[in-house]
Image (tube, rainbow, N blue to C red; front, side, top):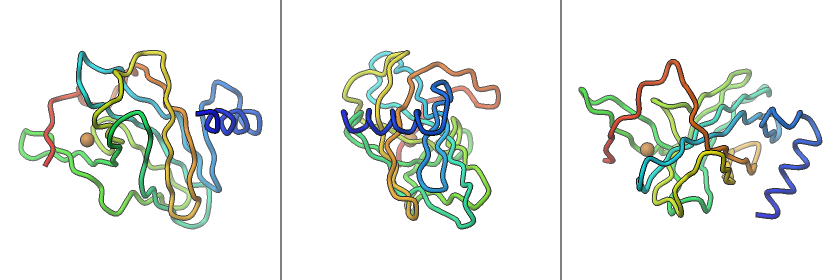
Length: 160
Ligand SMILES: [Cu+2]
């Protein structure tokens, strides 16, 4: 916890105004990690963020970890007829050079399975992202209700 805090302070002091909520590792920039507040007693949640690759070579988000939940997995959302299903992303998510990959509602998400405690608006929690080339970076995830114009409403979905 303390280590994450120090790392965050260094990142903020080094390159970004405090409101920006960005984290850099190597040539990658992780923008605005956030998660929705828990609905009732739901044991699961999802986190979202954008990864921008300012480098000249592709990188890959291999995995995400954290104490916020019993299990943290990268998931993809797929439509199976009318039913939204999700499945773990096995080989990680490629971040092409010069491009951004959006992990946003309705598509890729960071699944938080078995939350240690419900996520409350205004809270934040640490997650550690592991990249193939850039290495790992700790980010702080804000819990907030974010109006997403393009996102479909959250629906019940099923694990395979
Ligand atoms: Cu999921």
